[in-house]
Amino acid sequence: QVQLVESGGGSVQAGGSLRLSCLASGYIDSTYCMGWFRQAPGKEREGVAAIYTGDGSTYYADSVKGRFTISQGSAQNTLYLQMNSLKPEDTAMYYCAAGPMNDCSGADSPTRFGYWGQGTQVTVSS
Image (tube, rainbow, N blue to C red; front, side, top):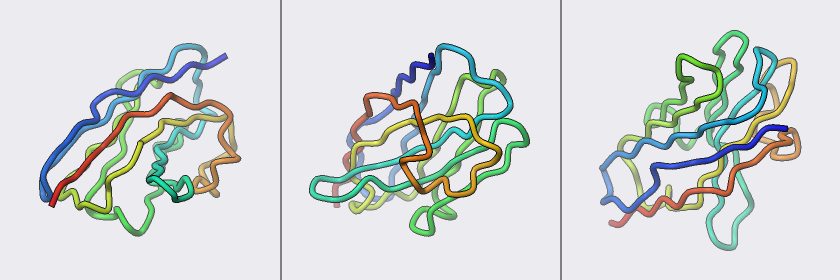
């Protein structure tokens, strides 16, 4: 069983930065895809970024490419999301997710991930 706990959310002005962290307890090995999703009120949950623990390959949604960076800590049980040049449209609840997979293809699909955190709120004001 894997448990995920996010931290690092908050309120920031447009153009600012935040760093989200996700600490996983339980067994995460080199065959997991770990990712970040977000959900704004009235909208569907969308994939933001993902990383495959085995080889470090990454996936980014077009809306965040060049602004967000996903990374792993030295241990495979820590995940980060560095968010720069934040925009009001980035405002959402951000969730950490993980699941055993062969790779992170289809990482924009929430159904592929079996483990979820409770979420951390990110609010960007204009």
